[in-house]
Length: 232
Ligand SMILES: Nc1ncnc2c1ncn2[C@@H]1O[C@H](COP(=O)(O)OP(=O)(O)OP(=O)(O)O)[C@@H](O)[C@H]1O
Image (cartoon, rainbow, N blue to C red; front, side):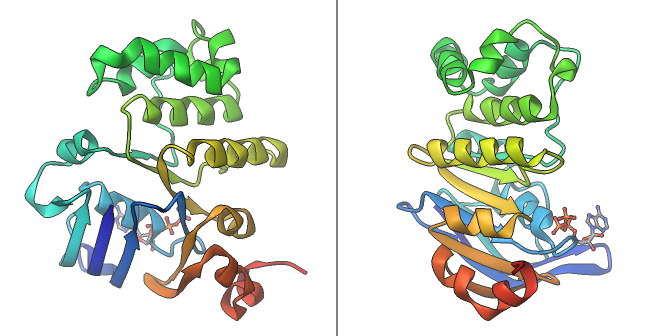
């Protein structure tokens, strides 16, 4: 579903990604990309969505070389990204935000909205409330729900647990596990243990380079993860 080979990305003269290669396969439920602040995780996701152009290497998403098409085509093909900032329309209602997510799938809006409400009952209770009045956890659910409205084949989530209290973060991880029965999730996270427990496969990105990769279990047991990221 995703094939990245030898990727270099610069911001001007600053090189941020170095020779990054990774893959997401059809039968993957969750692929996690973990690493510290500033490692280049968000940059990698933005390059997958076609928002950033690599200086070298190849990025193929759902059979399309992202260099050859506008970023909107990548969404239409089924790769949807939920950014760390969530980018909700704060003055629009919950339901209107979901409608904004369905612009490529207008004809199935009602059934997708009902599916999102079933997954997140709290959003149905608040369907007419402005998005900015929701709690942090509810806003994250709305951002994920809005992503699902586009009927993605791959849903990329950039630090979905960011700024959430532990209990809400756990709720988000449980949601990701549920979603991943139907949609392949690419999960960027700093909660390394939780992200790797969920993952079929994972990548550790440090200083713009893939340092280690393997199954979620292999990574959890690797020295690089144990020594650098797990307490106790
Ligand atoms: N628009 C930009 N212009 C210049 N440098 C940038 C830009 N965006 C990010 N960077 C730099 O690129 C590097 C990687 O940033 P990136 O946001 O991809 O890391 P990250 O792993 O997602 O970090 P975090 O976990 O803090 O979100 C950092 O050194 C950052 O300062």
